[in-house]
Image (tube, rainbow, N blue to C red; front, top):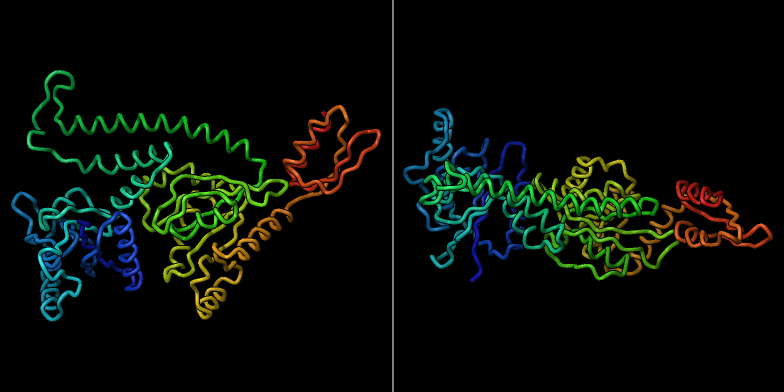
Length: 452
């Protein structure tokens, strides 16, 4: 049976109704990616999250009706609230109750069989808030960070991605661990004086240290590979999750990268050559997708995939133009790139999924972003045009130079063809004369090689 979930969101000051609804809709897609069925939504406007339960008392009871809970926190779980907050909430809850009486929640399940077993909150919860909500609703409680971490855990394929996600997951779980029935009893023998909870947390710290050590070795190897590619032309696809980056990667490179219409389908960095191949060769890399409120632990864990963006010669900002919130998604992408210092890397803005746009929407987007490239990753003509734009971009950065390679050093010719485009070739008594076009750094390196 598909687990049922209720979404919970608090609209804080400064957040518009449109943005709040978009956040909840995105949370719904995240929950769907985990395999849950959304059967209800509870939303409230507040000056801030309630310290103990996120929601006010009225909304908490409304939520409990969807899960079969009491809406009250059993004795032993204290509400953290000030007297001023209590007075303000009493007025707020009175207004809520009146509103609930006047208008029934259309998302509420009609029968007990449709009750939700999971509550998903569109905010980061403290351990005490999660516990209080669980006691009041009698349901499993997840916050946005927990949902994203769980999705990453399920989708990680490579050893590096699995290690990165496990670090983020352990950092998330450690402060939320609780004492079990006999957990406060002191252990005997080795580690005496520590409770079971303390032992478990120490094991987590040791495991994180072990993972970081293994990850450092993998990333050192990746750094070496990136250093070997530093003289090559590199394009990185960046953008919001499910914007179509992997579909575009497949179209540009002809590679069989994994493509799925779901959030965070790609967590592993893939590097392939642009097809048909150019001289010098252009490498294209696909990166992990971004999302609003992406947990900092995951940003830190996926440093290697973000380094691909930082060290690229050209970034392709991929946006799902058919999504009503595409502007906000673009802002999130640019915010993450600013955070890692990649905002100064040359870029193209790609408004993808144009096959889903009507003429009016297309015109509106182009008026707002006249420099953007409107395309569909599934339209061969659009992909061909994009490929030419990429080639032309690098062509403008190239310089023309002449190399004379003696017949005794013909092994250098292979390096020339790998790192430059040969315009003309001739032979005389001095050797082979090549007129090439290459990036300045590559041309300078080749010139030094011929002089040795």
